[in-house]
Length: 120
Image (cartoon, rainbow, N blue to C red; front, side, top):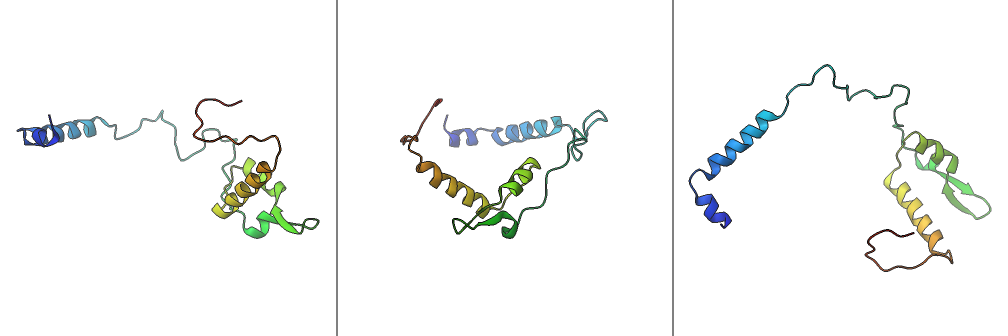
């Protein structure tokens, strides 16, 4: 049956409304005391994620020999261990620099996409 013929069938909309009401009624509205408090850490000994996003003065350090700025590796290591986040420009900078570096490697293969399955 086409959609328009279904909509013309008597009871089509009332049946749909009935199904929506039944589904809504079956959703539990409250939690029992045994459910975990999702506002708290499940493992209290694990510290919460870092909420501070590093600013550019913290993120970049000057590489005097090359005369450019590079990401602060020590800061990033600790920040990522603390589940910290970066700004979008900082993340894009890392991705662009990594892409440039890896494309210069002689052992990298150029593979046309899409690639499906596993590559080893």
